[in-house]
Image (cartoon, rainbow, N blue to C red):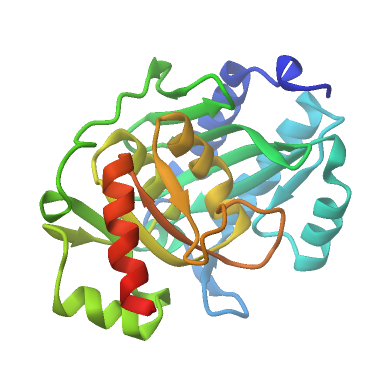
Length: 270
């Protein structure tokens, strides 16, 4: 693969993901056996089935690009990252597994293409709503092929809806936000990759998460950036890095919202 001009076709990628979701996810929604990983998170046979199917399909279509999936071992994932200079697919085959297993309609598939240390292409598919979010670096963000137009980017913070994952935040910060809410209302939907998309399109306006993995942020952060949104870690670093270590996220749809939100968050932990 040589640069942005030779990127895989989004239409091909979307067709592949839609087919896999219809075959390996929708028939098992709310009707699958749960198992628990070493970190306590849930995994189902659907996670493995769709990952295997997509790894096979991606490898057949683009054999020169290896695939890193969430359900691979850390040793496999690290090896793939170390050898990623010529391109690497980064995939979360089923984000929102707990929702999926419980029959809660909020889960998705995420695929991103890493090349030369940057995410060049991202696609996130919500099979229940049939919403496909996508972006190519420097070419904008899209929802079902139409330019993504974020709304409510000028709302003052007090009128914003926030998406916050309190479970993984520093205690001092979580207590501050609960005791003196600087926003209108707060939600937590249980699918990190959809969080990015819903922020990018303006369903919510501000976002905070304490720990996200590589596959949680890869596609979503590009979609948000290409839609005009903003994101950093709590340490002030860019969110995406080629590491298996978790990363915090503070983000917003609009620039003024981001600056106001970040000021409050950082003031609560300083």
